[in-house]
Length: 213
Image (cartoon, rainbow, N blue to C red; front, top):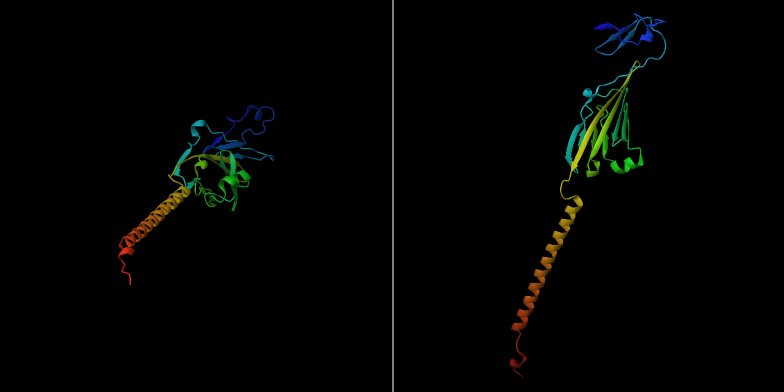
């Protein structure tokens, strides 16, 4: 439904020059602005959300060593630009079918070969997740067209719990167990050999009992 915009615009827009009087119409459902007898120049749309409409932070909790996918919740379009941040550090950017992951040395050191992006949805997957990956992740979605530009922000809170013994610790336990088994086996063999030696010594004849010829 269309409504006359004269009651919404600044007074300066009408007094004196009456530049846009009766020539502006606003679509309250889409926010689109129609200007009859269009004036050339730059027009800018500013969208302000109230605090009540700010989306809540999505919570994710998983165990160390597993994978987690942060869902962008949108269908990505070719003219959209998506940027992912971890604690305000840029970690990934998706532009069209192209993507950049961890171009910063610090990011590359932390997430080396563990980040994947879905070019269809913009979702981010973290593989072999670590305790140090806990924190706030933020997705900025820049929606661009020939007539407007909108930025959306989604926030994610990721909490990683300790899965127990690490792979290195498990390997260490296995090595110790193998060594203990080997030590026990060596001890048994040594004991058996000693018992046989003592038995042979007990059964050997006394030199005094050997008759002389």
